[in-house]
Image 1 (cartoon, rainbow, N blue to C red):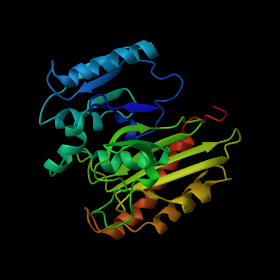
Image 2: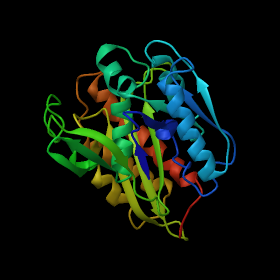
Image 3: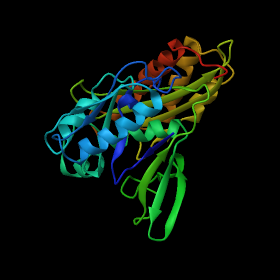
Image 4: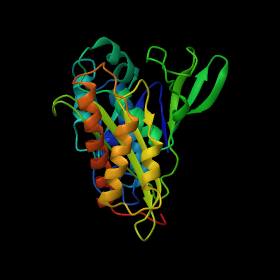
Length: 286
């Protein structure tokens, strides 16, 4: 699946915070809202309507544009971030929403970097890079370094990300959950992106786990994945995988709450994510 940037505008999906079931074959089965985080008549509205029209033609469902202006698009972006994460609330965003605001505002009610990077990583995503020297594709898993966070990207300074590419799900079920101090603050203290694939007997044939906000870059926890492989997605295996994730993690002392407490909470939230996937319908053979 490709989310193309139309003159630096991107269609951003709010489903990054919960089960990624919006790509099921019956999606969409009702009206989808596209939020334009600015007043009517501007480029946000124009792109939202152009994209909505194309999606209506392709998917045969109604896409309604809803303008939510204010605070340099922060009002609209915050609304989408807190919307029911079912894939039915989308947003058109520019670099102002997804990049400039991150540097200008100290307490944004959303965080595109910490939330979206683990999700893209666990789904096997890649980015298209363009510069005056040419272009290329880079897997998300190779985009981040493991340094102290100051120089955290492997891409060159003149390279611009123009496209996010996600491969077909092929039966993979995924979710994103996050631990935060309170619901009104969208910035995660721990972000958990998880994905599994099970066979007809409920045995896990593929598992992926990526943590955000606990390291300078998205942290893939293969030790926890190995625990689930070849086992039913049952409580015993889930708890063992959660403990493995906590053991492999060393939360940074750079955000709210002590690292020791957040390390304990990693197991809680990893278990919550995999329990959610265990309860979701299997797509074996999809």
